[in-house]
Amino acid sequence: MVRLKYGSTNTFLVRGAQGNLLVDTGYAGTLRSFYKALKCKGIRVKDIAYVLATHYHPDHKMRR
Image (cartoon, rainbow, N blue to C red; front, side, top):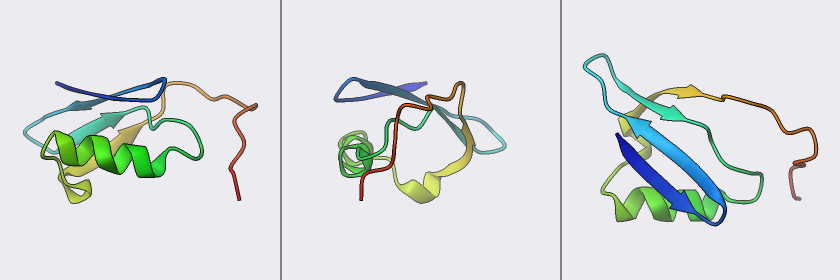
């Protein structure tokens, strides 16, 4: 398991034989930081096969 820490977000990548699972995705507006965290760990976006969102925050709105 790989912990991706960026801002106040904790996201985890669980490596598996059937593909890698990203647990939680962070907040709206953190995509650039997410990509940077992946790069620091040597992970490519295409290495992620599955995404699991463990909970929903209705107060987290997408920034435009």
